[in-house]
Length: 73
Image 1 (cartoon, rainbow, N blue to C red):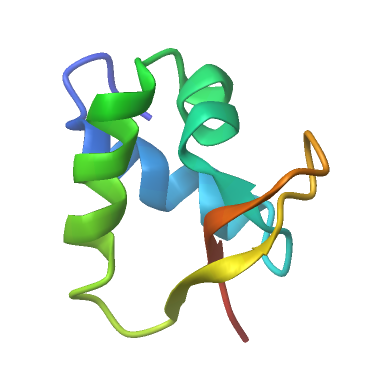
Image 2: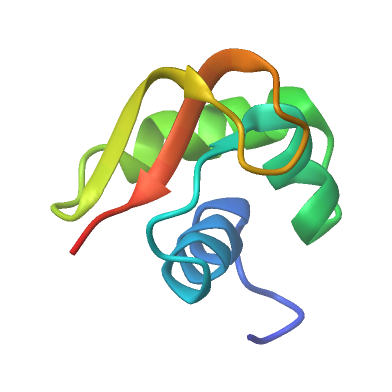
């Protein structure tokens, strides 16, 4: 991942590398070094691509029931 990668690109890479695991915006943001509000916007943009799900479920990192994003397949 390049240092100039956008938040969406960084999130996409993070999720693909952890395919099948659920991440809330706070945990995903912490995982790629961005704040939760930026992670939320990146996740909303990621949903435009095939292969990602955004739904309410348990976060694989913190265990809380939240809106999560995950890579499928």
